[in-house]
Image (cartoon, rainbow, N blue to C red; front, side, top):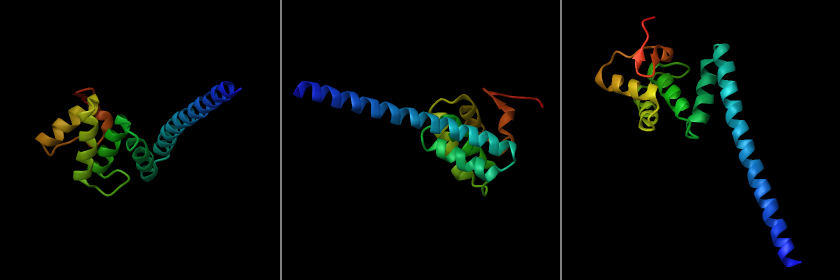
Amino acid sequence: MQIQSKVRFWKITVLIITLVLIQGCSTHQDLYKDARTNYAKGNDRLVVEDLYSLATRGDVAAQYGLGYAYYNGFGVAQDRDTGRLWIKKAADADYPPAVVAYKKITQTTDFPADPATVSLGKESSN
């Protein structure tokens, strides 16, 4: 009987951990959905809040986006030092747009104002 009780305990424990992990994943997806919705509505401040939540969880695309927001003053007061730190964090994780952006901001003060203009190492001619 004691062995069955221990097996049941571990099955329940694994189930609870799995449910927590699944909830964490849906929260991550919800934050992306919220960020896209807020962006479409033009609410830059809420986009930055969503990006911050994702960036602090290690999402490199959000780290890059947050860095871009701070660097250019989208939805927050412009703070190039904070922007540079977030972009560097994403670049250190080998996120291609961040690598390109970080090289650019450390070599020049001319940095594109729209993150869509940087695409995997090549600036578009738009």
